[in-house]
Image (cartoon, rainbow, N blue to C red; front, side):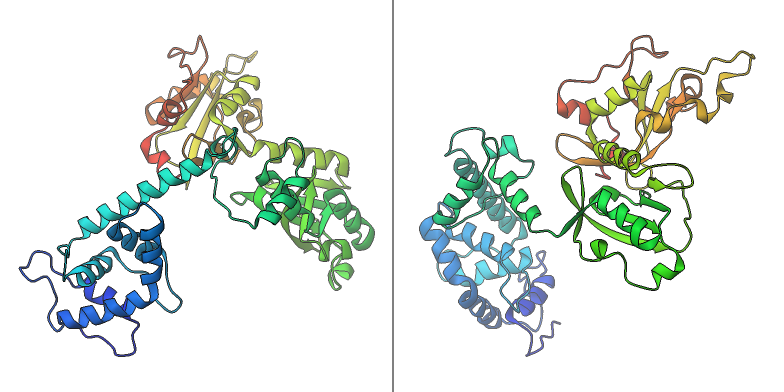
Length: 415
């Protein structure tokens, strides 16, 4: 028995009714609901969306059923709810029942939605290729259509550099509107105005590079007042010419932590120039393609790169494999100290791996030796192995799809 509240929006009523449909019954409509009530709600919705549907039918190749499905599953009028596929099926059935109404079926609605989406996709592909190459797909990871007044487009065209795409231009113009402080000026302001002896970037958080968390030592007298003016008034901090959103945390004592990327440390003798170079290198290392990741392991002296068959947190658990440590004493290679391996196995600061159709987070990096890897082989998958590796070489495929399929399915599902 369906009970509808009078004050509910027609879209809400239709969703509630649709949620109670019984497609296994001869009459799928729930008890307590008449066909006239359904039609009343559907025609109320038609007053909101009907013009959109009529215009799409008149101006595009979408059929009326495809247009109805496209509009009702994507547009939400102010005060209305998004309609479920079942509710859209009710709408199509009620509005068209007098002539060529469809049976109540979620499958039929899904079919209309797929056909409409495919027509829209083909139309977008046509628009993308009406100009000369390079095409949008060649320049952007996720190209999107943007409509502008012709005069505005002319102004943008005049502002673009010789090799600058519209995307690059708009990003540059938006960056210019930010109140940004260079990272060197931020450090200098804390040293000058707050007596700071320690400034660092916190890297323990996932995607730490997308919003820098600045940790700054400031004596207690300084923390009682506002932060340095250059910091308080800035929307972004500029690193190597790129503005990045940031937030800051001031501490009375310069507490150093392993997850900190130190920009300045008076006690340890780390000057800002050195710290900023480290930050620049770290930002360049947070993301890479699988071939780039393998190159980093190889350049660090690695013999193989494996991934655990189970994810670590919400990402991949990587195992760069290095030759066994050479010891004068005849200790077992498995006792080699972790300090003998390169920092992060050559993958320090790696956060993400770009694959052909997704970006895979890196949850953990555990460098190991060839001898130690023998105990891990059963629970890992080799992504790459150099000639002469114990179990034989494993070449990295040239095909991006084949490279992606090297990863276990359980790991890919985290992307």
